[in-house]
Length: 307
Image (cartoon, rainbow, N blue to C red; front, top):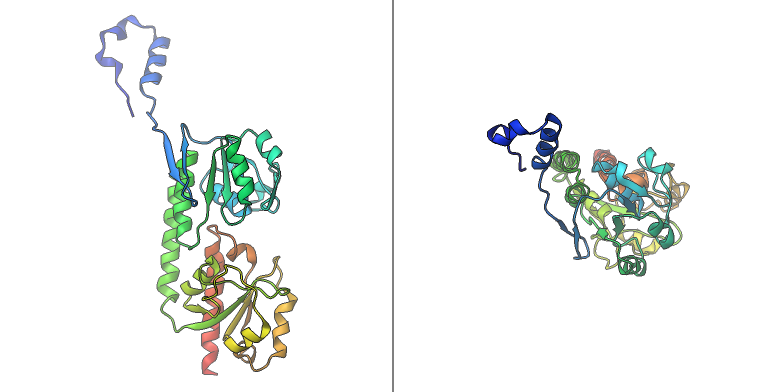
């Protein structure tokens, strides 16, 4: 910051008090350099000043923006961008996979924040071709979320809040890691949907949460992030725990469908658990809330081994 005291200048005696104030303000303004950040797609984004009008293209992006202290700069949100509650009242620009490009442009954003694997590449390309500044996020590991918070803080000029949030996130992650990651391993099948029967592979952030809790994703080796599997494949894997998410806050009824397969270890030991999807499927700080619930479920499963 350039801030020179006028007390050392003879002209101080020649200026009115009002003019002195104006000069003092001008010479004490912080010199802010151009903001340069590389996004998840490897694209370098440059801003001449912190963003003041931001449009979010995914619910998880909306959460990240608010967590980084940039909530008051968000002027556009997507369908299902429901957290925090203040986000619900923001103008909508469609869904993550079916964006209303005209609505985005009409909001005159100086920054558009998208989700690399959740937004259409064609839509992102179109927005960039229209001259909009687009930053893509894709924290595939839980620890990556802290870095995203810091980068958002840099882009929005909210570094103090963002850096504090990132620090708290890393500390909480380390606490969970110290407590659970070296516990006896538990084989886990994570079900995100019933028809088709879908799970996650080892590169998905949910699988990272399973690993954090000392679990093993029985389908971690599959090449697709959210692969479709068969009931027969689940039976062959014989997980000790089955965890379901579904779509809402309520435990999905279809989780109990597994009870017909009594030879499954998860069924025999009554290890059928639920974690709310918003807490573990969104790439946001709340993923640690979901991870903590998951860790408790796996710990309960470990306790049933002695029975």
